[in-house]
Length: 249
Image (tube, rainbow, N blue to C red; front, side):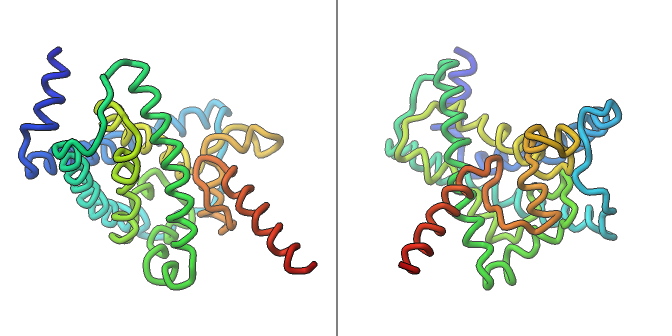
């Protein structure tokens, strides 16, 4: 009951300035608090030969400082992302489900799946020549990705990526707790996709786990645009091949 009352206060009583402050603090803790912990766990597991580095190249000079600078700008923008979401909730344009454990789990899974689709679309657009040259190049300055590159974006890219909940919850009923917990699930996936570590030694299916696809997208420039999965890349390749074969007939 106490938790539910607190959630209701956030949803309906907090000012938009208070909401921004709460959101900004939340994303700051996720980034500055969890990044060194996640990195430390990866190093420990690597020392036990459970994880292995994807690329052994050194970071370029000033990379971490560059990533922190752009991540701070991204966090500021992410802090504003809660405002339109709460605005829609207060207008009763969003259907909220009870905060049962099942609803929370389903909500987080649904948002994570939508994030994969949303990311693929945005990422594919950002790799068009104009957007790559003027916007997405900042994220790709991290040729060897680190946990600190997860939010290292041009402000326009950060703004686009912050719209995952906004483009989902007006159409799909969801619990408030799922909305609030989603950034935690998202950044953990992002850490796995940028930590430069993978399970296994690169042989067989095991190396494909733990965000290897996106890590290699940074390190080797491979034209895979999905994040945690390569399913959408396979679908995209299949459709593209079909149209190319059709043209030849």
